[in-house]
Amino acid sequence: MNILITGVAGFIGSHLVSHLLSMGATVVGIDSLFDNNDLDLKRERLAHLGIDTEAIGSRSTLTGTGGWRFMRLDVLNVKGVDELFAREHFDAVFHLAAVTGSHLSSTNAALCFDVNVRGTGSVLEAARRHGTRHVLFASSSAVYDRNVHSPITETASAGTPTQAYAASKRAAEMMCSAYAHQFGMHITVFRFFNAYGIRGRKDSIPMRLIRDVLEGNEIKLPPHGGIVRDFTYIEDILEGMMAALNTTSINLSGNSYDLFNIGRSKPVSIETLVQTIAAHVGRPANIVRTLSGYLTFGEQPEIYADTTKLERDLAYSPVWDCEEALPSVIDWFRSHYHVTFDM
Image 1 (tube, one colour):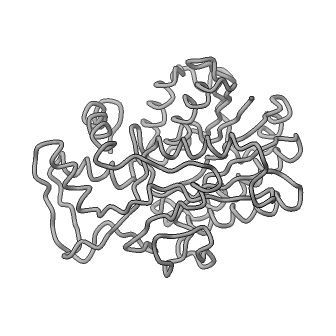
Image 2 (spheres, rainbow, N blue to C red):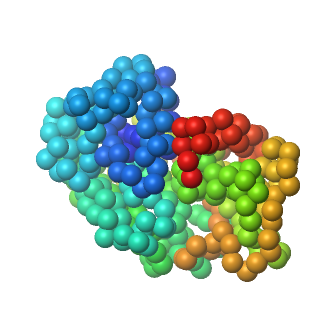
C-alpha cells in the first residue's frame, strides 16, 4: 500500500510514519516546515525518523529510516501536490497538514483558513483526479458548539464555531463530505480530543503543564476545579486511525463519508493532570486559584468524547490512561527540553 502523509513533521504525522512502515506500507511524507514557533520540534521529529534535516532544501526528496521518503512541499502548492499524486498513485492519504491551535488562528486567521480550507481542497482535488482510494482527514473536537454536553457524540451540533480554527476545520469537514458524496470518494474524518505524547505540540495542555511544574511557574486554576478534558494518548490516536484505514467496506452505513471521535472517553480534570505531573517529578505545583486560566476564547469547561461509534464500527476502544502514559512523556520532556527544543 502506497500512502501519503501531509503534515508529516507534525506531532501525529511523525508518529504515524512508524506505524505505517511496521505494517509494510510504502510511505511518502510532505510538510512545508512552516514555523509556528515549533520548527525545532519539527526538525527533531524528522531527525528521529532518520531524515538528515541539514539536507532539507538541497534535494527534492530525502530518505529516512525504513525507506520512507520526505519532501518539503506545501499543500497550498496546487501544481506540486497534483504532480505528486500523479507520479505516486497513492492508495490512501492521511491529510494532517494544518495551522493548528487557537493562538495563530486569532493572530492570523487568514492563514488559518488558507491552509486548513484551501489546502484541504488542494489535497482532495488531487486525490479525486488521480484515483486515491481513501482520504483520511484530521479534524478536531474544537468544531463542536459550546452548548453541547459531554460525552459528545458525532451527531452533536457543530454549526456555530466561535473561533477561526474551529471554523476552518468545520469548513474542511464539509468539503470532505461534498467530495465523498459528489464524486464517490471514500473519506474518513477524525475528530481528535486533546492528543498528547512524546514529541507533542508545544501548545498542548500536557506540554505546557510539564514545563510549568518543572520551572515552578504559576498554574492558574479555577477555585473549584471545573476544567475537564479528554486527554488522548498518541497510541490510541494511531490505533483508531489504523482501524479506519484497514476497514475493508466503505463503511457500515453504506455511505462513502464517515466521521469518528477519537478520544479516551475518560474525563480528567486539569488539576488531576497537574498533580500527576508533580508527583512524578517530585516537586509541588505552584497552583494559583483564579477565575481565568487554561480556558481560551470559545472553549467549554468540560469536553470529552463519546466513542460508541468508534467502538461499534471500527472495533477499537482507546485504552491508555494518563496515569500510565504521562510518565514517559514527562521523562522525554526532561531529557529534551533546552536540548532539542525550547518553549
